[in-house]
Length: 201
Image (cartoon, rainbow, N blue to C red; front, side, top):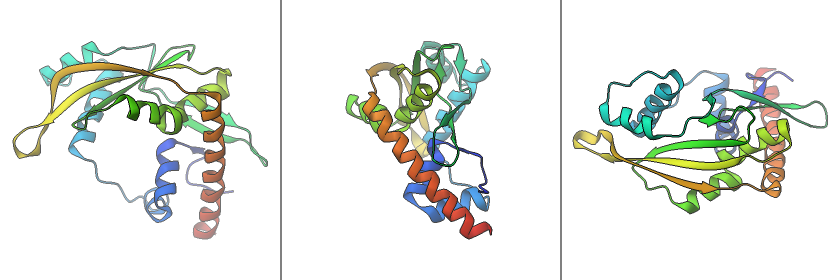
């Protein structure tokens, strides 16, 4: 089956679940999504951590120096999810991951305070569970998971800036969570293939 990408990522899956029309606009017809100020700040932080280069913002660079950094940083990791016809390629990209995939850390920068409940939900049925699924498919083990929160606030004119505070929240994912995610990924991929067949053929 012809699809615009040969793999499934969490962002693609969740966009399709939310709106097949928006998914088609972005993945089939190249329409770009808007990026919020907070997303732009998070992207700058991620780029700095991946490259090892300073952002030029002294507070943001201080925050980056406080974050845990494993051997793999923002590296694409591929896995294969068994499926009836042929395996589904899964793409995960944790913020940082141990070389042996025994642990991952997700960085969050948000003016909305991240809580333990929010981290648990991500690890049990959100993006971090998707990452844990990819590692499970490769290694048959569940990684240790923690979130590191870079606090931010709004300044004048809506500019988002880091406050200088970083804190860590630990969470976990179960085999049951991963099995539910595999079922969700299979459903999404099947529907994506149907949509692509309708739109492209």
